Amino acid sequence: MGTSSQHGAGPGEITPDGCAVEFYTLLPVMGEPDIVHDAVPPGASILELGCGTGRILRPLAALGHPVLGVDESPAMLARVADLPTECAEIEGLDLGRSFDVVLLASTMLNADAELRRAFLATCRRHVVADGWVVVQRADPTWFATVEPGSRDHDGIRRVIRSVHREGPRVDVVIDYHVGDLTWTHEFSRHPVDGDELSADLGATGLAFDRWLTDDRTWFTARAIPVRSS
Ligand SMILES: C[S@@+](CC[C@H](N)C(=O)[O-])C[C@H]1O[C@@H](n2cnc3c(N)ncnc32)[C@H](O)[C@@H]1O
Image 1: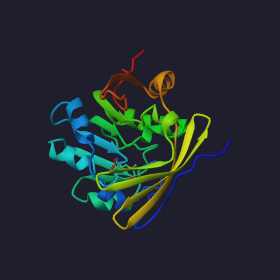
Image 2 (image 1 turned 60 degrees about the horizontal axis):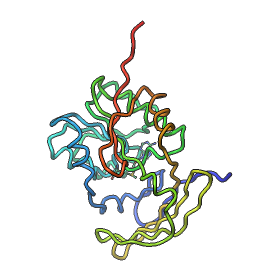
Image 3 (image 1 turned 90 degrees about the vertical axis):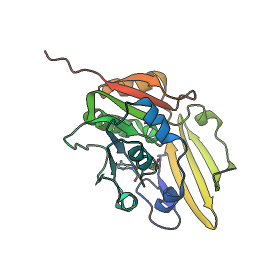
């Protein structure tokens, strides 16, 4: 069995998980803030784990949500200087306060099982008892269908250079071209579906709530009440 890897290259700073700060600065929103905003009450406070440049968080703040962004990359957070942020690893994070909504977007859920549960445990630790954990996962059909090829979207050319399947895990190498600039991102994604999703949520004190999109990439989870004995 090979091991999964996360690596990035290209102009500007690259985060430990291989994301290019300059690329995320150029990446437009693709409907994410509206999906979150429509799923939760107006004015609900939102903690985003892995907020990057604030691509999703900034529009949520503009929609009237008090927000806090967490990211381990100071270079990413330097692009969110207009919003409250905390530079920290998500796993093990304990801010000592709770939010109406905890957001885990950008397919970060599709990490390996150990990291995924650590991310979900952090979501659980920071959501109020009657709040919502909002998650975006990779499209489950992607794992069987992704192949090398290219597509253009919003002025960005995405070229999938290689696809390697290792059991359920998929390792890809993608080049992103914007104008004269090119970044390469090499990463692994693990499918999270059905019983495994329920088990991961349950193990961290969460329960599936509902799908937010027809393609079942976005969903909410709620905290399982803690019973006092
Ligand atoms: C794919 S980017 C997405 C950024 C943002 N959510 C968006 O959609 O524009 C993932 C971000 O999560 C951060 N990140 C990844 N793993 C992390 C970890 N274990 N702890 C803290 N931040 C992490 C990276 O630094 C990066 O900024």
